[in-house]
Length: 517
Image (cartoon, rainbow, N blue to C red):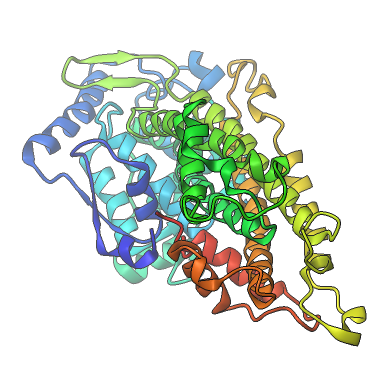
């Protein structure tokens, strides 16, 4: 989804289930709109009024008339309950590390708004409206990425959203990092005074890991398609055997995602018109088995979507407030185990794609394996070929990025740590898993960018040598060659490639390359 299309839409909250694509659209700048129906507003307000009635009756409600976590045995006097949410947001202001991007922070806001809009958190409609306002004005909390163990919610990172709502800490506004109070004063926005349950409701959920998971899913889904296109281009560069992707062959092992990948590669290779371009009966695994490797991700995407979207549309909070039935239900819906599993699983499948493309790159660079092409795909000829090195250093970079991606595949979810006086004695580590997954995606996109340039050069070398007819290329592959060539001149004389690599990575992350069939 490109930025222009995402900004053209208005995403509705409080009117049904939200999709991953809608969260991504909000992240990229789409406006949001709360359900304005009086019945819905009354439904939300019932929960807030129920909390008020319990306070009037001096009822005991966790996080409202008690301390938090292991401090739940500490009773908070009714004269102090209105200060408790502010203290919760403040003592969690200890996040470290890099800050989330504006897109990621907007996704966090969207995920938290959607969870609160389920109406099981005891918050006021006014709170939902304020998050809506901040999103539509593009006032984005500065959120450090480190400090959550992924159970009892993303407490520390989400405290930065709560703090902004009360006019504290910092925001990104109009491209600048600014004090929240100054931005609010300039725009005549009155800071909220959080109601008794609202600090806990804002912070005690999985919005950060879920937001990152939504962004990761979109990038992973695109990478599956892009890796299929790169594989087809690698096969053409190597004069590979397209019979490896035959539909009859794949009918014999009917994993639907794997077979979808095979179909995309087959269609890119114009298989039925040119079934055999190679003297090799069997290409090496990084070509022949590409559908089986990329297909693991493709087959996993449906369950990943189900896990992420269920979490996204849930009341991942504690306690749950049933305003209509007037129940307070204490549980553990802040636990991020499902997102942790998805992110740990996705980073494994994505890193395997990096490794696949790394092996494809190794084949096309090496004259022992590339079926007659020059070493390192250098297009230099004659005496000057001795001093030109083509993609030699780029391939070293690809090896480095792949190795780092593979190193990140250790599951974060198995590193649970008992914390907070052993109240949080088993935690999900979902946010760490999500951050790891984003790093693996970044590294794999770097590998893919290098491969797009290299395979474009490889195919052009075949065409220049009259070993491949440009007219025989499918429209899909021809379009990719055209798009890459807009930024990348053939590599004849050695030149720095950092600039074009960065540009290509950015276009991958924007979904620029047309890889749909």
